Length: 273
Length: 201
Image 1: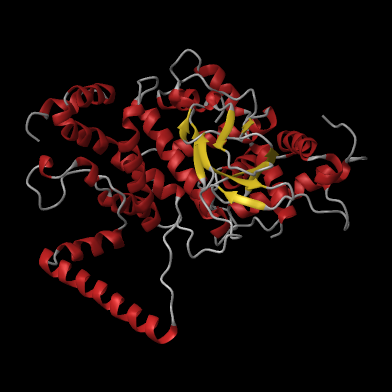
Image 2: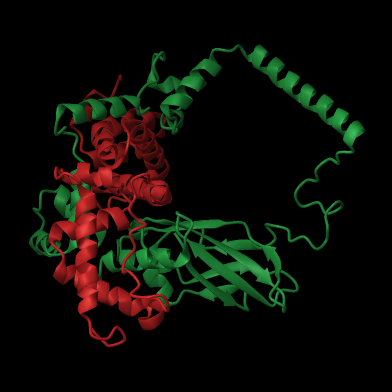
């Protein structure tokens, strides 16, 4: 699949997005979950009947129902529900014995099994195993250093052994947006500049890694245009990064990757899904 | 669970308030609350995931996120709406990230097909106009179910098998057939246009 092909699917995805007439997602969900009894329910329901985006949302919402549709599904639901760690951990005598956060940490079935096995090894044996690994690595490195002249790696940020022409990562510090923010508070992208930069290139990617938007700016901030704002959906995590360019257009420095997601429920007044 | 016998009759929102008012007992209260939604979240994850192991991982991540975000719940909606939106958000973020890895994705059936080598449609008329035309064609040319299937697959990132399961599609090719049919109709709609560079809004 080449870039143009991605562009075409992106156009289709853009055309399928909710439009300005669509209600806010929380309002649609609230009305449906309350059994369409609120005052604005008739209008919401009528809109959803003729709107594919909202109808699809209601399809998704209909799946938020614990009643199994058949025995196979019932078995799967019970199996999944039984693996969610939210109650007292088996073996403990009271809920207070286990920190609540530990009960909800994401652990897959495989990892949980490994963790259990690991937990059965006495602490002293785990320390001994770790010490043996460290000792073994040290001996192996010393042997390689003497026989092949292996040079120890430099720590990030130290420059003594680095080629000065190599672009180093993480020099540009991203300031905002970061994390979950209210949709209407997104006004600009800001970062700390670096000396010698003639311009900065900003890239925003969706979680699939596709470039959603890119642009250049001479200042260390970029205002969010209406075109860019229209591309950003709520509840989706986006990644962004900045590259500093010199006058010749060569990369001087890169930022780390920042992430942000627009949350309409942050203040309850923003729109969109 | 000593001291929480009466909690079962409380509303979700009352339990959240109690958990905030009594931090030392918050875990007890939240266990009661989360158990109310355990099966619903599990069911949603089963219906929108490919395999049950994947659904279990997703459900676990949902509850981790619910716990992290609980301080952000401000009673502007019901707790049910809030936890559903968190569930959906976690799942759709995952689905979009996994989109390229979908074994049964038909994203390689692009739309629209280029009529001949040369400039793409986007280059000729601009993406914005193309999107407007697509939006109009989706509204006028497609059956409602076709449009919903497109939305669930291309926007929400559900796999075709998940769309089949979610919508209870029992036709032989399931969601794939609806997408092929929808794209064919959209292509036909575009081929009727006399000039792609004209205003068709």
